[in-house]
Image (cartoon, rainbow, N blue to C red; front, side):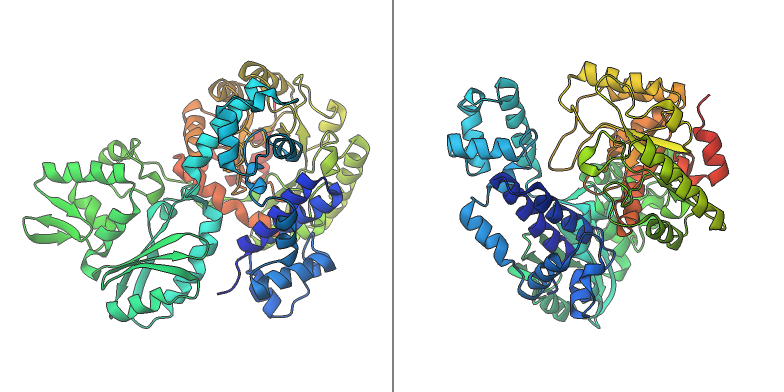
Length: 573
């Protein structure tokens, strides 16, 4: 079974974390983090590149040493360096880095002073109120750790959608190669495009059920066969992900697809409507008495209960049933509606690719424009731009734009919102830009009132366009800072500002609920990738998924407009 990109990037992330805990050179740590990000953003499987003998040093953030380590991982499934590190530093300390408020120094302090080596140790120490006694921690930090641990326990069995895609894609292709498989779909929360996935439910129509099940259970990545039957089998992959394969009859495939896509609450609501019509719905079809009257397609299922077809992303029993009854479902945004990306980074700050490379990649995606928004000077670790360097980048973009036909580079910046609500660059340089993404990267622990005031103050600046990654959350690692998002959205709508839906699959910030709130508040969003490499531009699909779950149509998304209309829309008055 080929090693997946996520396997390689996870090893590099763990090395970076353990090295950082040890106090290694920051540049060495950053090299591994950059390599992890680079591999994560690749549109191709890294194993295929190694097998084809391609020069990995051409990848952003990958030098000769890292390239050799990638080859070792692909060829052996492991990396000796990580094993050596884990021999010196307890491996589970890596997991502590995912707890909100715990950086490498604090993790090391917990290990050295309290002997904490695992999440279980951390929970015990926090409950016994030992952490607050350490220098630099305190009661508030201890409580925050307990809250973060509670959230981590709930998410422990779930993986990010991006990883689920990498696990599902080769398995689906493998099953398609079996001559007995006629149709196949991954259902469940995966199909509803939830940001995290607990397991995979694969549905198929087959000619020879038994041989397909045998074929499924001997898949090379299977670690354990939980059960094997004629119509259903369950396995656990080497990554720990559980996968169910169900074989359904063609006549009931739509009903099965509806049933196993869920959500459970949505299915219950649909079944209640069926009962009122003296019908029964299950995974095999729609029945009147013992007669199956529908179920070949999902459309048939909804028709029988008097509902318009409901897209999978909306099936959460959160108003979609009522909207379908009255034909008021939104026409959801689609990937093909996106005309450009409004948040990207180049080598000028902490990106991995040149300006020209990023532009070419955007053109290859069929975009009409790309906003280049390198960091401002406050983000020193990311080599942020001061006014002089930004001025030179503006001149460079202007010259490159003169050579481009049918495409425009938007001159932009990701400018930091400072603690007092001022922006990190003066108005005289911000005025020369087409677009400004305004973000918080520091002082994340301010109170809800102070953090909200900070953002509202920043919005008063006439050059504030888009609030970048609005809550600062990182899925499974950081819940984000405390803000009154409803108040911020109301102000944004009134003042002509916009909210970013950051499409990086580790962020997806805004959440689906927040997207719905934005639509109801009258504030439009920018779906943007925050790309730090060419490959990351392809993360746009995750942002579109999230927007669809938040009931957003193309009219709610500013980068569905052509360049001229976009620039008119974002111009503050």
